[in-house]
Length: 219
Image (cartoon, rainbow, N blue to C red; front, side, top):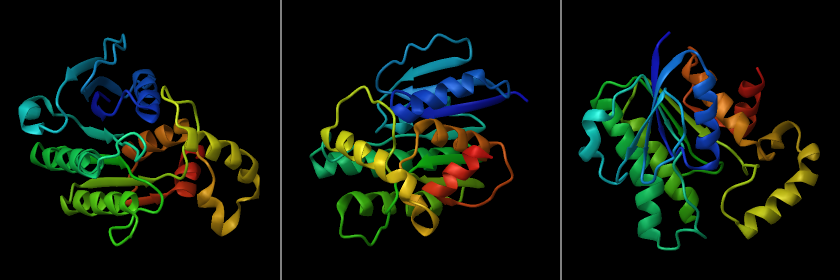
């Protein structure tokens, strides 16, 4: 199998782990990275495109693949301006989905967030919910939306609130079972594993909660 994958957000925590896994996966012979800064990952499989991710028409001819993995996301602490935040968390994934549909890419997998709801009074959750709705509206043949809970692991940047949350969840995780299992902290490795498994399966489910992501990754 000679597959080509596109990763958006390969410089982030989950995206960088996904990249490493795809490089080791013999099913993939080509991996295209579209980002505003270079990753400089040395592999014959990888082609990097340093682009403005808010201007998809400028690189539409190169945006061809079997699958798109969208790992784009920011935080309220990092991006305080709501208009800029919306342009990233909503604008980029939706533009990517539109271009995927236009270019005949049949698989689109995007990381959203637990609690995503277009009717939410919380701006973050509302934005994620609106993004999900807009992506699904494109009716790409195989669309998967992942809603992880708090993501573990070490980022390149320090986020104080997230750090405290991870410490707390480290103690609470064993207690979260049954109907509240979806609130468990999840590792970026599990999210990446789940994305690859879904891309190579016949699963047609569209939205996955955090506990479902964990179970698929462990399967």
